[in-house]
Length: 302
Image (cartoon, rainbow, N blue to C red; front, side, top):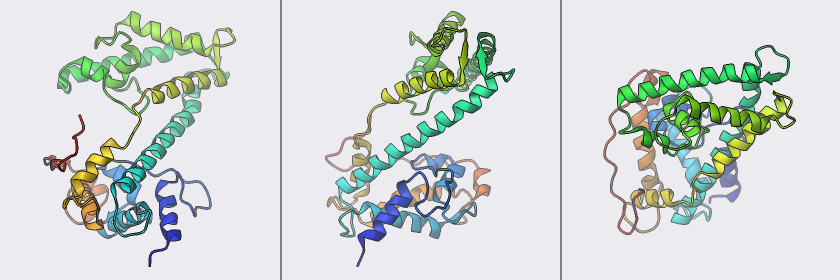
């Protein structure tokens, strides 16, 4: 007979930023998807014994634990509400992890910009950092134009990015500096955004940013960015439930649940030896297969 204590322990291990039985804080494990394109991230999430590799048996055990923790009423199958609740909770914790990591990086960024180490970022130091951001953004935009990765820069500017935008990518550079959303950033537009950032941070008007002023300005921008993201209402999870519930009885067995797990594992196990390890990261990702159509009565994501 399944105990709720065991399932609760599994859920804590799967959703907590640190493991429940840890004696000291550990780096948080990734919580959500995209791992079919990222071998290292897949290993970080599913490597329970910390040996840097994930055999199929270890991954299967991980998925079984998540399934049991998601099965809130302990009946051995998942209904849609259980499946959606687990996914929404996990994505919420993922966003909290991301926010915390971003905030922890502000101290490092402050020290990097404060080139003379006096504990203050002068306007000159801020502008020197801006020159690097401008150069990074121009390189990223040139690469975007050369590869044709997007039909137009406007699409990059309007991309839905959950992470805080960075000038190191074309999408991030446009999100921060393309204020009129025309897919272009001229120098005057860039300088206006930088000036506004410095002015917002310099609360005491002394012409420099303290570590607290720098951190508070970034935190305000980060929280505004996160507040503008669409709220995950579980729609994506409901669509996925309809796809995985292959007999359409409204109840997902572990075998149905593990279809998506096996598909992801096979995608990262690129040398097909039933173990995901760094050797797989050196190989190209296989082409994606068409996904099955959603079950009748569900709506595909736009």
